[in-house]
Length: 356
Image (cartoon, rainbow, N blue to C red; front, side, top):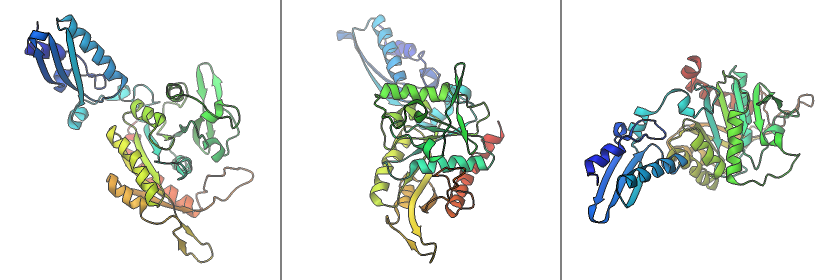
């Protein structure tokens, strides 16, 4: 039977499934306890991310190897490596996005909310359009697979074109768009289980021809912290997140869950956008705070991130010849607010984009 030092040497040869460094390099072998009389061994290992399919795979390999080495029973526990260790060994290049992104320089931003009805999709499409107005190359995934609405909001009537094994997204207002709406009959419900949703998301990343020079890829997530949001966090460990809320305290309280989920999965929250902040009378200029005040500020303070902007209630100016019911024109007062928020986002990643 192996000694404790021999076990540590043996386990140290296993690779962290996320960082692709040996457990010896990451100091990932935390504890080894052997009961020789019962031929039992207990080990505690630290890896970059727990609760994933990758953890299960390394777990099976470790158990099999220890049993081959003479142990009758094996107990194994996992914990996560310190953040400084993860940053030290985090892989650069395509490994960092699991090969899902058009380019390692593409900035992925998930737009999330704690609950429905706060205008998350409206925020998503207007941020995408305003980044495109700035000359950025932008893609938008309607990842709200049960409640897809992006094509209707943007006035999209065309459908993607399939050439060979690639799907070419629809381009509207300078944004490349893909949505579940393109693949179901009009207004039909989607009754799928989690694994099927995850497969569709993977297809949106790998089978869509985004081009290799995409600057930003925005994801309109479904509300809450369900399967789709969790899949995105696991698929794209480097993606950023923006949380959308309304000023109402309850909405902000629920939105905090989405922010907490991002933080717990090591995703950077870029900031909070407060939607439906107030209604401003065109005649008097007086502001009416219909849904209360302070929700966005409180949420930003709780998550320790900036409040990127406060967007009032108001309808876009509709152009019957180029109908896009949720897109604000750049000269519209609300359109100007969206443009300023887009500028903040673009400025934050200017170096990464320019160094492609």
